[in-house]
Length: 251
Image 1: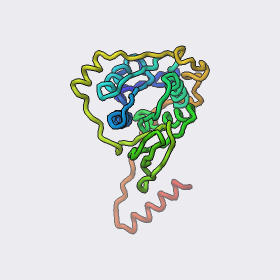
Image 2: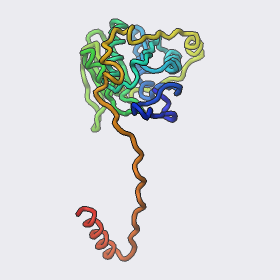
Image 3: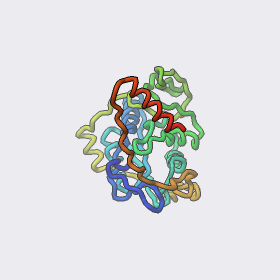
Image 4: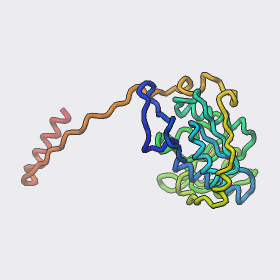
C-alpha cells in the first residue's frame, strides 16, 4: 500500500496516485505474514506473498521475504490502475489461480488507507472458497480442515472450516517479528516475480477502472465548522436557553 503520509489524489479519475509514492506493508498484513510464517515453521510448506501495485511495491515485498516468506509476486500493469476493491480482489484471485494449489490464504483484516475490509472476502468469492474473517487465533489446522477463533464484540466464536480457506486476521493473533540478518541478506538478492494483465489471462473489462463497479465521483474539503456558543449563568437559566436553541435547530 502507499505510505499514507504521501497520499495524493488524481483530479481527473479521483483515484490514488501511486506512482512515485513509497510503498510499505499494510500494518494489518504484517500480522498475516507473521502467522503464515509461523504455520510454515510448525507444519512445513511454502509461503508466497502477493501484492498489486506500482514497481516500487517491490520494496514491501522484499521486506516480507526478509521476515520469512519464500517467494514474492508483484502484479504491476497500467491496466490495474484505478481498481476498486472488487477489481482488486478479482486481479489477486486470478494471480492465485495462476500460482496453483494452496491450502490457506491469509490477509490482514483491512487496509489502513481504505479501511473497507472487502478485498479478502472478495478474493474468496472469486475463488469460490470458504472464508473466516477477524481471526484472532488459528487453534488447529491440518488436511482435514481448521479450527479458528473469530473475534467478536462480545468475545470470540470458534469456527471450523474445510481447506482451502481464506482467513483475514486481526492484530490480536500474534506479534510480528523483526527481520533477521540472514533474512535481510536473502531479501536483498531475491528476485521478485512480476506479472502483468496478459500474464494472468484476466478479462480486460474486469480490470482497473473499467472493472470497478464503484467510482469516486467527487472529492472536496468540507467547510470549517463555526465555533460553538458558550452558555453561562445559573443552571436552570442555561438549561432553558439550551432547550430553546435545540428547538430552533430541530425546527
